Length: 425
Ligand code: HGY
Ligand code: MN
Ligand code: MN
Image (cartoon, rainbow, N blue to C red):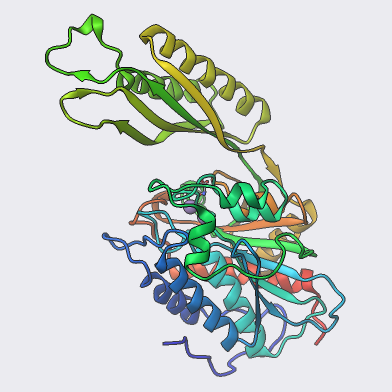
């Protein structure tokens, strides 16, 4: 059921302009039915059939809003609302429709469907802009199935080659390029050929600050940098019962000690540093075999370059020391990285002014999570708008936001885009 277009209920004057909260919420709930999780959230992982179904729904909604769709060879989707000056570079808005395996209904999706709601509102009110406006769905933001995160926006920004991206394998050994072709979303546009006047991304905070501070809007000035290290420890499979302790070469023990060290290193750099091990693969993963091999991913982040660099060096040293102590082989691969991000100060000011004009409480904030905007910031003036989420919980099926928070964030996105795209009538 496509969301109903509302009757014109308000004059199309600037400050009074608001999105349609019910229509936005309907769209979020409709999209959430695709790739449902098992506990009320979503499992719409990138390049799955559910991802494709969600893309088709998004495409239908964009067509209904009078937009034309372009798709590039990484499957990035670009729905365009024409502007009065076709020579003017478009203003892009968007985020991602793919989710974690145990994801929420709003991570990424609010940014895509909030941008669509902005266009629907402009259509309802007959507002015209100088610059074209483009709503974007970036492929594989999450990096859960195919590491690293923000993969397709990274190719768009020239961080990764397309060959590297398409060679990435999921846990079953399937190739990104094969899976993108299988679901039928390889477009014909060259990745990165599009030039942008600006890019704005609306996203839930995925942390507890805005809710704790009682703020409706986060004006995102920076994004913290991250490293993803994949560590492979090699020991020796052996019987857990009959092998004396001093003869064991236990990769599982090594992983446990390094996991603890990652936590200690992040704690030693407080505030503004985080670290954890999120993905662990144990081999042979049998309850009565000492693990001869463990592959695990370390995720360390900080908004401060010096801290990020220090943590990476300390984690690397700690891993090598633990491996040596236990007689384990140790390989460390950099599987994801970007340095701390400073968003465009002019756009940050526009977002802050939009929140003020609309009367929404707001504060400057640093994004704890990575986003496509972090890469696009390399190739175009970029900014993010955030709304709170309940208990700061995300990457969890219990992720929740309120319709009011969703509407506030989208109203700010609307007014920031109107400012940047220049209303002409
Ligand atoms: O990992 C991240 O920060 C993002 O949610 N992909
Ligand atoms: Mn996200
Ligand atoms: Mn996410």
